Image (cartoon, rainbow, N blue to C red; front, side, top):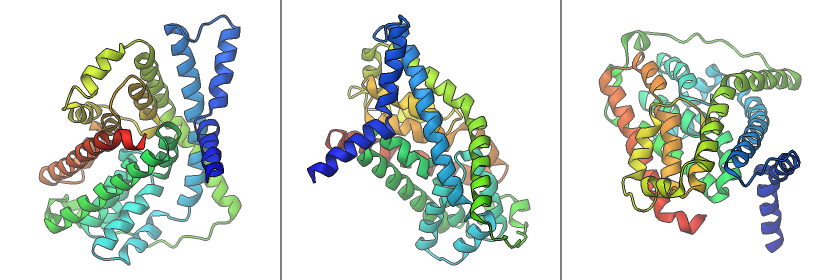
Length: 337
């Protein structure tokens, strides 16, 4: 058992967190005369290290996830969801959301397609919540920063929000709150040709390139913000605003994430820097969930598909769920970190 623990710790530090890369970059910068313990040197180190680490992980994860995703085109996903009923349908929808697009804006067209095809609104809402909030990439990325316990709990609680939110939406019978052009739409049943390994790998690599181009600016912005937080913002300020002394830290972090637009790849460096400065774990994770699930651009897009009442319920469900998750992680932080 001890050997397994040693092996896992090594894997997390050297493979997921890329400790070897951290040491390599520090050595190179120090050799160039830049002191990595200074503010400027520390910022440069953080920016280079986190950018490379996130982009490498991003490439590997998207390749794997996109290969899996090639087995679940929209029409096949719709057929799978159509086989289940009740809460099981919500659970399957939430799980399928983990292997679909990486941000909220790209999941909305799929939500529209599934709703037009006649799937229950509650089921499509479980998918809509799960898709940006929880994906397979988030599990690995969170493991690289916070460890496996936090990562697994984050994913499970995110899925719980999606299942509960979809189930509640179904119970409220809000189908008339979906815009008429979607309710009257129809899905064309197109058979999917069987893809071979090379075809799936080609598709997966195309997704890597396409996604990397789209998210790279957000990663750079996120890493830049993280570098500033990590080396220039006083630790006392972070602790005062987002630490134990502020019981509203989770609420503030959730609200602060709304105006931003990024996926988990762009929020990881900010979360990492905030945690290192003394922000509570639940506050950091609430911020990440707020950015990925409740970003203003995605809310604007969703308003084109649903009426204000349903949009408000969606925002309320996600907000309450994120805040509850945040306070839960704050309460158990010292037990799992």
